Length: 282
Ligand code: AMP
Image 1 (cartoon, rainbow, N blue to C red):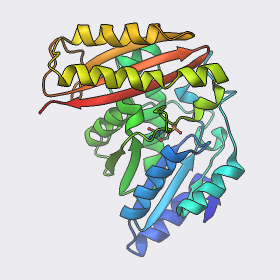
Image 2: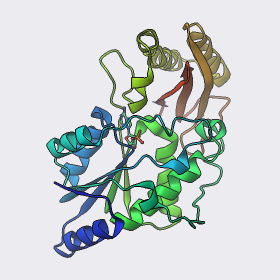
Image 3: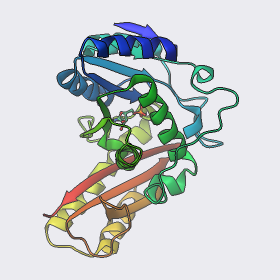
C-alpha cells in the first residue's frame, strides 16, 4: 500500500495504473476509520483492480462553530486498517494541498440540498460536492463508494455526477451498525457513556415507524410525530429534524406511497448524529 499527500503524485500513480488497463475504485472519507468505511473499501476491493482511499477532513464542509478542529484523527491507525482491508493507495492531503489560497470555484447541487442536513448545515453540501468533484478530478475513478448512512449526501453526489458528466459510477452501500443498532460514525467517540447508552434509540424510533407504516399508516405527519415524540422522550436528546421525504426529490411527503426516506438528525449534547431508513412499499 502506498501513501501520498500530493495531488500530482496521486494523479500520476492512478494514470499509470489506468494505462495498464486496471479499473479504479475511490472511497472518499474523513478518516478515523470504522467498519462503515471498511465495508465501502471491501466493496471497492471486490469491484475494482485498484482501490484509492482518501482521508481528508474537508474544512469547506464544516460551518462556523462546528467540530472541524476537534474532529477525531488517527492516521497511523487508519493506515493499518486500510492496508488490512486491501487499499492500494491512501491519499491524505493537507488542506493547503487541496485548496489553493485563491480557490474560488464551487460546485452546488440545487433543490436536493435545500432540506434535511442542508437546512441545518448551510454551506455543508457545497463543501462536500466541491471536494468530491476535486477528488474525482484527481483520482478519475471508474466507481466511487458512499454510505447510505449519509442518505442525502449519496443522492446529491449521484445527481452531481450525472449532471456534470463526471463519468464515475456512484455506488451506495448499506449502513453498518453496532450490535445495539447505533450507526457507526467517527463522531460516536464524542458521546459520554450516558449518551452512548441512549443513542441506539434513534434506530429504534426509525424501526418502530417502519413497523407502523408497514402495518398501514400512510399519514406522514403522524409518522414524523411518532418519531419526534419517541426521541424527545430520551433524556439528553434534542431533535434537529425528523423528515419523511421522497427518495427521488427529497421533498417532504404528506401521504406515504412508493419509496420514502425517513431521516433524523439528533443532538446529544454538542454531538449531532444522523440516521435513516428507506421504506419501500412497492
Ligand atoms: P465520513 O468519513 O464520515 O465522511 O464517511 C465517509 C463515507 O463512509 C461516507 O460515504 C459515509 O456515508 C460512509 N459511512 C460512514 N459511516 C457509515 C456507516 N455506519 N455505514 C456505512 N457507510 C458509512
